[in-house]
Image 1 (tube, one colour):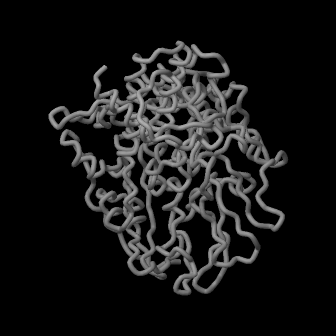
Image 2 (cartoon, rainbow, N blue to C red):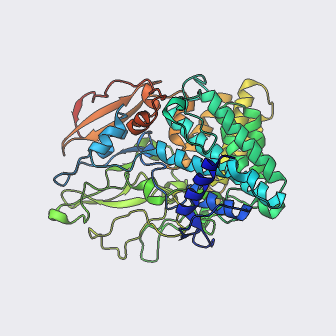
Image 3 (cartoon, helix red, strand yellow):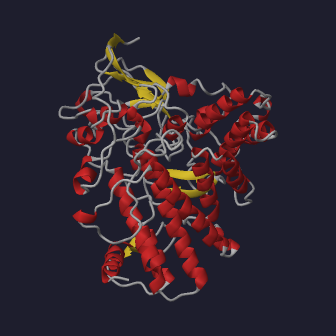
Length: 541
């Protein structure tokens, strides 16, 4: 292997050699060395390829794009604060990255972050043939590297490429499959969405094969590493997006039958503390939820924009009342049945204080993250919810409930297509198994839906209810036909404007950031919509 690759690995290790597992492996060494065994490459993966809880720019604004979010009442920003950091993505502007940067938000290059982690996975795959170790140890490292690369490319192509089920031949993203450095003459062009999906499947299937060679205890451990059931859940999701319903159901069922996991009974989750204040469980944590299969991502990265204030560090600055810019949309909240436990346990409430000091508990556009809890029932301006940070807290997870929903959707679609006569029964059973844990016993009723279209609609609504604010909704809307979305934006205390994402709109594909375009002359930008103007101004109700 070329010395260049040796240098890349050494440099990567210089920035991220890790040790210990309890605190998700805090950096402890900055010395350069060339790895000689699988353990060293394992450390490289953790430092350079895992989307750890201390890494940002993995999500940023994706949760501003869909229909589960809307704005809170108008608030006057602090002098010098530019609300375009929110509005640029919320209104699906073709130059959203530029507008966010101009508005003072510079930590938004998701494209670069994903490729940086892919480079770490590539370095391990490239270097593995030079080390001497037991086959089992080598396979364990390689299984992680292929899983991470497949996962990261799957995320990239669904952010920056068109939906695979509507336009597989559209431009996806470049496929960087080694740790070498391309010069300007060999810059990587974008591959088609289908080609990227083919690579994702290749990586995940290879990871599945490698995991199958390992002892059971190496296939899944609650140690923040990738694992076999994670790979199976990802394969289920990928096949679902590809509309390969049979394989989506097969892989979902593997996860559903895995005895390491069970559905969390929300009847066991409290909603209030002894003081009568809202309490929210840390759903993305092994110790808190038996559904968690794998954890990734930074809490602040996932929730900062939707819980941000108008440039005021202390909400009492200038004697003004400040609040988050966004809340859960009425359409999401109305999607829940009255007695659905998720309505109170998945969606964080904050007591909004209006201009006249009126107080009202408002559902926020955030859920399942760790949040701070006020110390008293007195709603002072210091008592507002915000995502917690700290060791061991993650912003996202892959959960067992998704497997039930993937299985239900795949079976419902096969039932509609006439390729599985038991599809309706299978779908209803999976949904009932999930929903039984989401209602009190006296409120739960088994489904009795036989019409295929009605069943599919119910599955889609159930995905929305169960997976809200976990980055699924935007991708689901894309693959379900890219329906029209309207976002309201308040421009004063009495006036608002409306931005519309039309049916099949080009805005359903995020533009490539300018920095990436400038760094790679071979990149071709997505076909962008025109600047999105507000459709009209109306008085608020």
